[in-house]
Image (cartoon, rainbow, N blue to C red; front, side, top):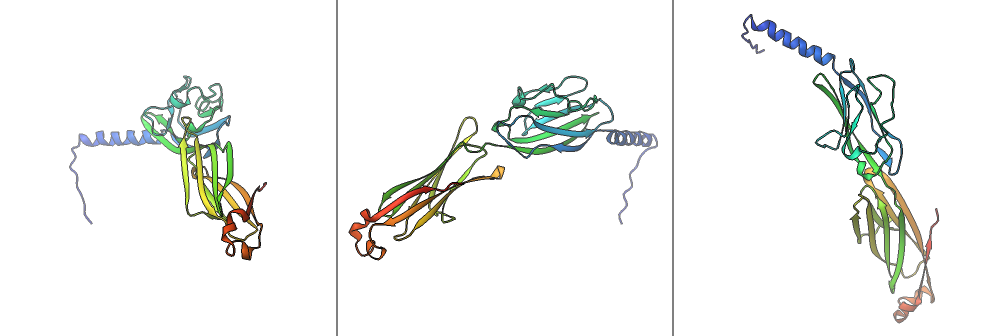
Amino acid sequence: MNTIFVNMSVSESPKSFLKGYLFLANVLNSAKIDKLVVPAIVQSGSTNVVLDCQYSVPDHHFTLQWWFSGGDAPVYEWTPPLAPRVTGILKGRLDLSYKVSPLATEEYREMRIFQVDPQLSGEYTCVVNYNGVKSQETKSMQVLAPEKEFELLFEHKFNRLVEVTCYAQSVHPQPDLTVEYNREPISQQTQRVWRRQNLLYDVESTAQLMVPECGDRLEVTCRLHLPQADYTAIKRRLLHIGTLVPCNLGWKGNPSNIGFSLLILFVPIVF
């Protein structure tokens, strides 16, 4: 075992002890965050969304701050007995008349948001500062905007070739759109994503499908997935395939009639 000896004069020892004692006392009597309540997912347009920072403080000589996504200044700050101060992205979105408690140390600890849109997606950090000692905790909130339009379309190109187009509009967060045939993704498909100024996304996927020469019906699915919001929407339609000549003759026996012998009906599946 190695022992380290530190030389300390008699005059320095009491001062160091006092500093250590004061530091320890300051830490023990500082603020502590007990629980941070931030909804993981909220829907765009929701009202009365509450973010709550529950803490313990020795008295009212503290400052509560909320920070948004690593910003350079707090978006919410409250130092009792003053009124809360709101800046940045939360300005004009909070109900400042709301008080969670009559206690002077807790009345404005919650933020009640009455106007929610995708711009509020991000990380929220609560910071409680008491006598220079800070306690903080961070949680994320994702704002979900479900699709306003969701369509699955078919276009018969020629012979057995069908083009499948699926699109969804005004969604958030960033979407993934997949076209499936008989419950399996079509290997070759093209996806395009556009981001609007309001942070909403439009997305479109197209795929080309060779329908079988003889068959009854095919099921085509469009799957919209928003990974960050754990949200999925599905659109399904059936292609009913019929031939005007027998299967054993129509395609291979008389290829000149291929363009005329295929009858495709597009039938939506109703959920």
